Image (cartoon, rainbow, N blue to C red; front, side, top):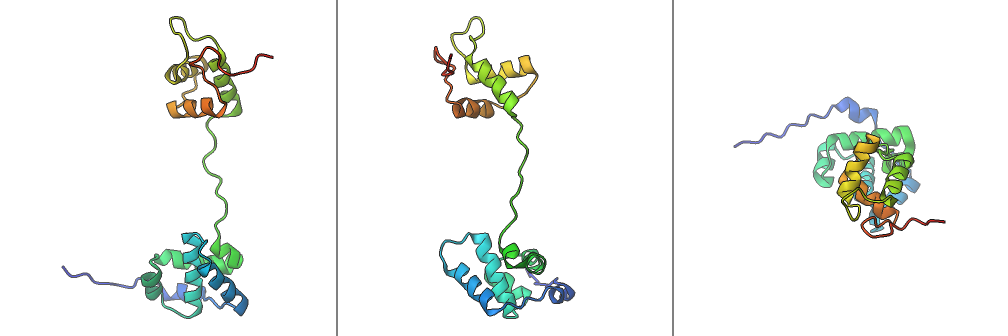
Length: 166
């Protein structure tokens, strides 16, 4: 098999985001790359900036640092738009919104502290899950029920669930 390497990089993008670091920025990036405590993503971005500052070609940077073309372009663009800090560090990501609100959690805790269903000696995680769906029309995963019970230090399978009766 013959594998042909083709450089698809658009030269106009390379020219659009040229990197020219001052001595202070170079010193900072060298410190980042030699500290031994830097996360891999930050390390790669710092190395990309240093390599671009030396005028290295995309293909060479991709080969040496083992990154994609888009990673190089994104790092360079972020440097121009957000500065050195913005190029190295990601913005916090909001993540997925919580499915179990405080209200749902309160209902689960109250349920776990009730008497178990007739014919049962104690609540189980599966019973709590089923009852949440039946009583409150809220489907909750087994793991979520277990986690919320553990987070609130409840033990519904014991005689006393752990909630205070003041």
